[in-house]
Length: 119
Image (cartoon, rainbow, N blue to C red; front, side):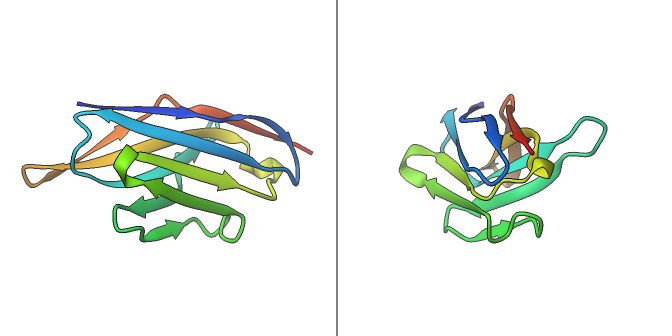
């Protein structure tokens, strides 16, 4: 079992920055991909960014050029640096970690952290 814990959310004005952190612990060997999704009430959860253990990344078009995902493999920790924040970035941000085990990939989720961007 893998535990995923996020931190770093909060309230910020438009144009500001926040940094989210997420640590995977427990049986956290063979974590292959970590990432962030976000969800607004009444809407589906959507991808924000992903990073593999080889440091390959992908981003949602809406955050490209503003958000940067990075990772410390030794600590099974992932970071999301969010710059030039917009009110439409307001959401609950969920960290996730994909563990490969016995030929199957399991995705574990954190509890979520609220990010609110005021205009």
